[in-house]
Amino acid sequence: MINYLKNSFRITNKYIILATPLILFSLLSSLYILFSLRGNLINLLIAFVLFTLMLTAFIAGWSYMLKRCVSNPETEDPNFLIREFPAGVGEYFLPVLGLLFNVLVLSVIFYAVSYVAGMKLIGDVGISAGAFSKAMESMDALRAFLTSLSKEQIIKLNAWNFLILFAMGIEYFLLLFHLPALSFKSKNPFKAFWLALKDLFSKQFFKNIVLYLLLFFSYAILSILSSIFGLNVITHFIFTLINFYYLVYIAVLVYGYYYANFVQIGGKFDERV
Image (tube, rainbow, N blue to C red; front, side):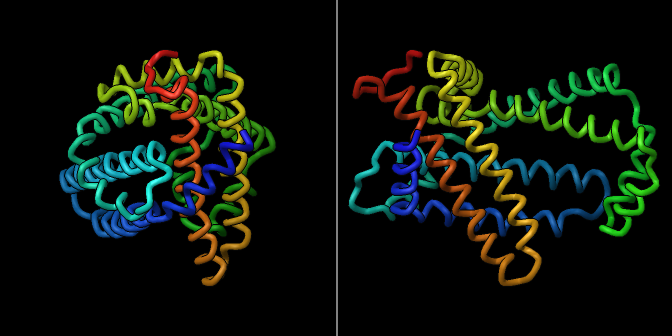
């Protein structure tokens, strides 16, 4: 695993241009969401559909850039990647749209199962959706809301948080190789998901768990540090850059790991598990 970490740092630093589409999409999508959260329900639905199409185009182009840099790590012109983005959009737009559909269906299933399990094992917390929404308006409102809860409600609320975090952790683990499998093995999103699951639960299973736990805890630590030190303009800007670099790095790490372990087997392309 150490070799993958070092090699991913080298590739990320060489192909740092990967951060450009990520930063641009983050800025444009933030502005789009800011100005589209108004109007009636129909306008909101249209805005949601357009945002989904924007997200699909970004993932299609960016994932193709990741595929190209991982499979051609020694190229002399790292900037060639930026020219690959439009080609990736054209080639992978529909497959990525199918991937997002898979993610939506899986999320609904996990949400439903978690809700049923939570109601049976934990029970209702006794908090209305309106009260919880109002508590999220400010830190003062949140503190007042938490203070008003009974000990039993706090215990149940913590149990619900743990259950949701656990369910999300399992879902994200199942989706770990979905996008790399779509890029390297099959443009059919349903077949790619099946191949990704076969790779995930192959003889490399424990190694895959180590990779996932590394991503999970490193992201958790970075999120905590960003919350603690990102309180003023300077540190917020620094941690924003660190977060962008981290996202590029883990994307390169996952793609590089998948390419080395499940694609280039014995020095040649292979779809077998």
